[in-house]
Length: 240
Image (tube, rainbow, N blue to C red; front, side):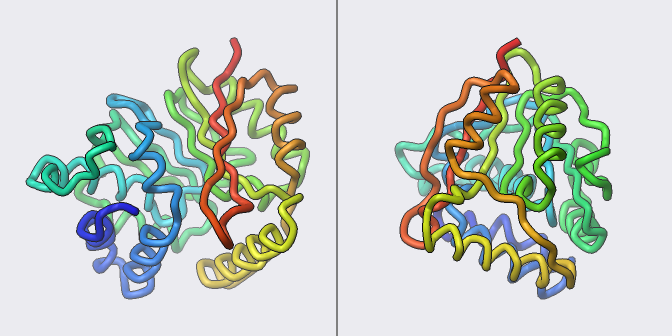
């Protein structure tokens, strides 16, 4: 569990974007294990060019910025002993389809716009900049199977030779936990954008087969326990 003070620091800029944005940030950063996991395991290196697909209201960028600032300005004494120091990305480029989320991200992170950019666009067609780390957390299941494969091909082409894709998905074979994940995703769609659409889900084995066909070498990590145990973090390195 990340330090409470870090969660509060990362959420604070969203007060400028409204109560919903602030409370959503607090809840997501407190309860979603993805954010703590990337810091605990050093999955984003210093100086990385980060592409965030389906960036929402910019929580990944806010999290990385806050972690570095909090650690630098005295939080080092409270930093979990087994965690490496937080990274300082060279740049973060977020692509998000929901305009209200893009607005919230830009308001909250306006002070960092020199190296953080959010665009309102569709990841199925938006250009991908060359990147060292590409993050796709809980986003690919919102699009159809052919588009999933197309996006992953473009991810492969956009990654540096030593780059990495951090892909968080739900294992469709995980029984009631997978069903709960889908119900939560529908609720989040409605809360964030006022609309919901069908999901395209795959089992862990099917995700691994697709990534293998597209020339990725993949490591699988469970991403949570209890109700979150259907989640998988697929750490995929391109084979050039």
